Length: 248
Image (tube, rainbow, N blue to C red; front, side, top):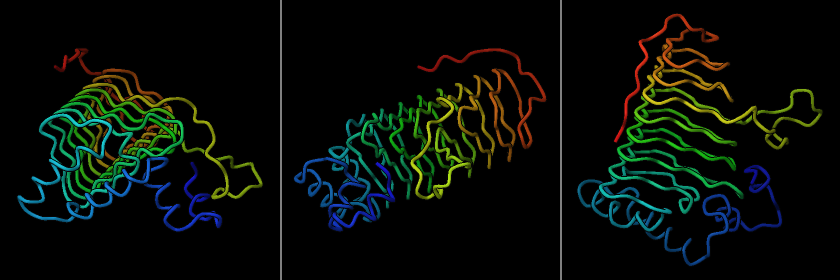
């Protein structure tokens, strides 16, 4: 599903466009129920909002574990393709967008933290966040292919992970009118890695386990496990002692 084509389709009503972008092919009854829940709970402050979102938001998702915390003003698209584990925290203003016609959507493991203003979004791709992943504020995680973040990895503020999303620079078709091209491959960020603030990790530039990526780095090729990488483009400057953490 290409967003621009949907919103400019003159054959569709405004509501039909909205429904397709936010809910896909979900039955109308479930769409209306979701709209009522969001209207009631999304902006509600204080303990009442905290309690109601914890109770009522559960029915919007494919699955929700115990002890999940939902902040205010969340944007949810295709929530029926989003799975949340136990004790997940979704802070204020987070976007969870699992849209696509053929994808499985977003899977979030136990004890994951999604910081304020972070955007996790798909364009017919899949995103998997392993247990104890910590995503700081104002980050973006995008997939039109498959993107996996390993257990216990920490992502600094204003960082960007990109799986897919390429365009053909040699085509006569304007970029805005092109369908997204196939990506170079899935993007995997290894377990127990520390990604600094303002880091960009590009399509298929996989990171191994137990890595440190310095603030402001741009990763354009794979980084092996147990490495420290910095710079633009990022290069390995140091090796770390090899050990693996088992997350329960």
